[in-house]
Length: 231
Image 1 (cartoon, rainbow, N blue to C red):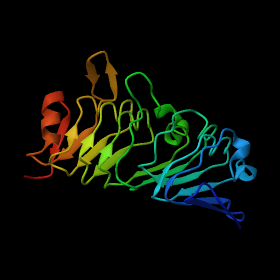
Image 2 (cartoon, one colour):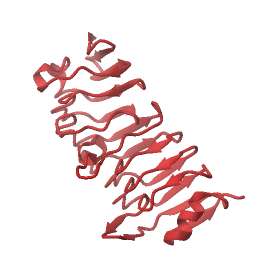
Image 3 (cartoon, one colour):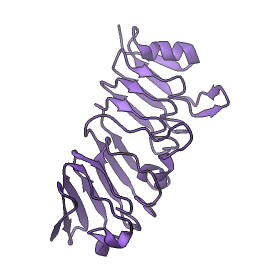
Image 4 (cartoon, rainbow, N blue to C red):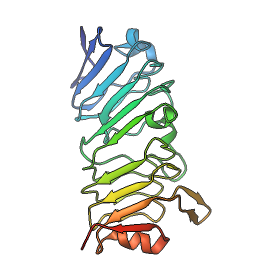
């Protein structure tokens, strides 16, 4: 068992037997400029599981650079989007991803000219993930947050307030979404599998929602299949 600090308000614990790294505390992690500076760098290649606490808000560059043995990841969905490839570099063999509530508000994974979705662990491991879980209580799903997240097949959102543009772009296996919020703001291209110019191509997703909801309005507007949960 090995423990240490990672910035002023963040600590870490590594279980050498289970090969599990736990990061806890609150706020942003200290910023490092190479993988050799990461406090757990000696164990990066052998770490099998990572658990990041709900109150952690961002990771340093190189945090899991070269963690090629990582198979299970649990982290808050509100963790800041990685802005470059170094954070999760070579994490391409993850099998289980659990996105916990955190603050409930996801970051945007794209801006007007730059995308970040390609640096997420669920994109890098999209071919190996067999279990993917997103907290049903998420409040905001950011722009391109799950772009090309092919492991995502079903989704239930109980109190989501907004889903940004292209949030599920190219999620070709997402077949069923249950949206229980009646007033969720759904961006025009949030749920399409593909987008070509100004035209979306509906990928077969069925959207479940209430009759007097924005989910119903979205389906009517774009010809998406709607199934009623009632009035």
